[in-house]
Image (tube, rainbow, N blue to C red; front, side, top):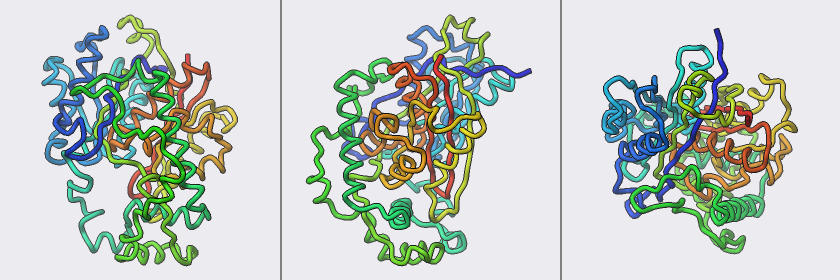
Length: 395
């Protein structure tokens, strides 16, 4: 017997700069999650009713290892009877935690669950898990794996995006984020942590002139052998240009996000009105060199699965894994600035790998509520050519 899976609540931390100077550097990844579990409890959730807590984490080592979800549940005082699990689909980990948990609700295996993600890039740096995809030269050679930034520049080269076009997108997402914060768009979901009550990386007043002065971010990596790896897989690029800068790339961040998911019976028992229905989800993969196109493929796949077209979608929340991929989605799916990341994205507000996808889904629900839209889709592209999309319907 199948059930509908509903979004019942959503909370997130602000995103702090992913550096030792960031406002959340002093908070452990477990501490970030505990703060959100506490917030759900303060909103009236009975932890004893929760049947599982599932977190996406991209770097599962050190402070982010050993099943952080179960650790956080115990530290939050939710009792011995609430399970916890973590999963890793690189940058798509958080959205995949939501997708898989919603699927279990639809299947009748769960009634009420928490799904989301966490990442402290300042305390557990990218690649610190030492996986063979990044550290083993033979694996890198055989797969052809390249750095994400070089993959972004490869995509920009193949699509012909100019530096000016990328910079214009970088300015746009900063302006959107600044407007959204000024309008209080995130007041319902953001839980202050360690004195931080807003996304730390937003740069109001960013101009095209300021971005034009930035140096290419990945030309050095390209010259150090990464371009050769990329061109071996995609010789049609000819010569890779490097138009992305730090202003058009996702900024590393610390943060966490959680969604409370459940079926109709669980929602009624908890006294909560469902805010949205998880209609469907989709996973996709691309070759590990071009890498970052799988998120868009997942969007196209989930729309087809639901019998919808891009014109039916009121809000696209697409993780800004570099400006070039956002411009491609906008071009291919007709997702204009009013529908694509209407409140800014990870270029402006930061990319906390494991948390980003959960932020995308929750932000999509919030924006549908604000504009009275019906359908929204959230999607993330990740390393090794992975992508996940989740389609939601506002109730």
